[in-house]
Length: 390
Image (cartoon, rainbow, N blue to C red; front, side, top):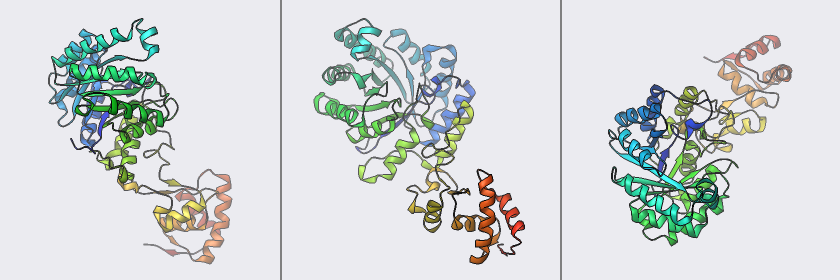
């Protein structure tokens, strides 16, 4: 793999599906899995096979149809979990078992009532057992974000020796600041023997709204896999949003980080996941929200109409959006009204525009948004005979 390639590990079908009310049936999962494969993700985390017969069946069927991506199944550091995951992945062209255990003081003390040494022993046993089924084994150090770096380095070194090919460093609670998370990845790169022979992975949650920033910081400091979901869906406040990290790397070429994602499919994929999960995308969501390329301020509209790059850093076509939207509101100016009027068939002179604009403001003060039908009514009300655009 190129040193500059960042693998995209999509966990929409596993972590994303943990959102209350977002349960998918097997047919829906297969539809989304095929789209993720087409999108160009490197790894599809298809589910947690031991959790239910339905999840086992879904992972099994996904493993059969995915042509390009690695198909991954999640487990705990429990032999039966691992055995069941291996059974579900038997048809995968590129199978991966994702196993692990909590490593923070909080998890060791309260979740496992255990010790650091025993946790390392359980992790080693899990990786070795998973390795007996598949070559590609990813180990997650749950709550790594709150794990002491020196101990985390010991854990990582032990898992590399046991056969892990990927080390997942999750900020499970979304607590880290970007500089802290980036420094953690840097520390591991500099202090773990054999670290250059494995891939470091970022799995960041969004409890403080920092998931995307933390993942990018991790990649800048040497991580070469980012775990994310479409629309940033996931447990609690969600996960790193796939569309955000991909476009950040795309828009900042000096980072020298790239992915295999076909960005032109991002918008449609976002809508597909939203519709199947019944989880609306907030209008101001970065990249794929309804308002991501919509402009209603007169100052912004004037700039965008003259040159898109004045207020847009991404060409909408890059992510599969047809064009920018000029939304007419009471904050819109003459340039926006003239632009939209031309779109619906009217070429206005400056004098005509001045007259029509006064009537437009009357409409705009009464409505949240002036739509195309309103423009026709405004033209009728003002008795302006404009040149008709063919």
